[in-house]
Length: 54
Image 1 (cartoon, rainbow, N blue to C red):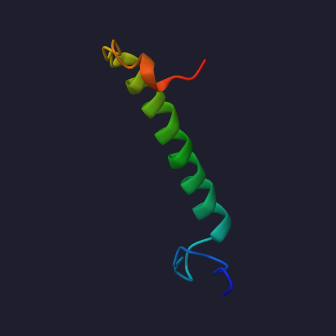
Image 2 (tube, one colour):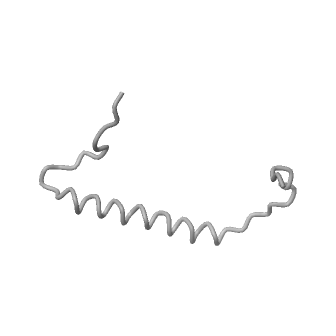
């Protein structure tokens, strides 16, 4: 089984380079905003020490 060359169906009238550029920008924004919002959430982790192996 071979992997597909491109998983996005880019229309013929859209430049592939610009399409992939904006996909990359949106992916980067997703990670940055997820990191920012994730750092703002505080979760009590008391009692979860049993899952750490030190």
